[in-house]
Length: 114
Image 1: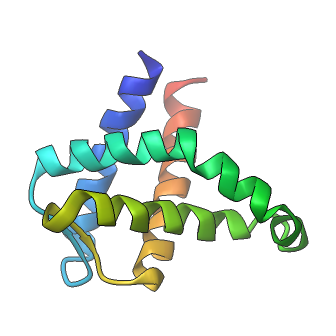
Image 2: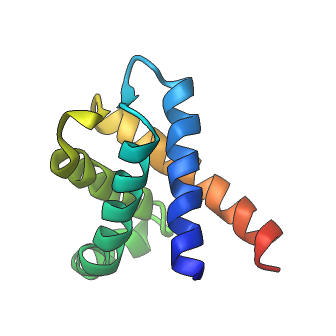
């Protein structure tokens, strides 16, 4: 149940962030946001741990800040899998979206799952 709530929260965050960055982050609708959120969650389960292990030395040296780059890479993979209904203009936008989503998810988790 917690996983489905997380997917819904990420879909709402995608919609909100797409509203702020209309030029560089495109979503065709809420269905695309749900699909992208679902794909992102699957990538976070399957691909993200592998990327973290492969980049562990640089992650340690950057004091964990490289995790934002890993999150941006998973967002770009989601962009590639979703096609034209979910578009991120570039790597800089992906990093910015990843930072905003991480901050929002931490705040939401502290409020909802005390």
